[in-house]
Image 1 (cartoon, one colour):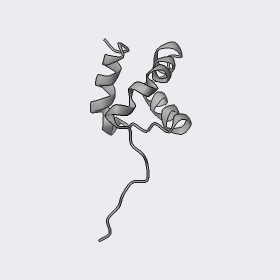
Image 2: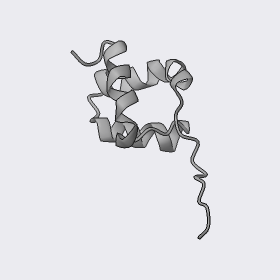
Image 3: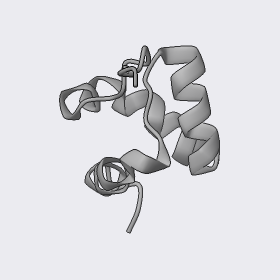
Length: 68
């Protein structure tokens, strides 16, 4: 059995604040869905978060005052 390591640089807790303005613009200003924001952030900005990382994403959106 071989070991599999991901080549994707998954978002770390410290990465969120540097992308806050872009996430805010996409989610709040442009009205993108959560899935669209995740896709754009990964493809355009190299910031990879998924629904698996939702335990980080949703609380972080709350801390950005994007979700109430």
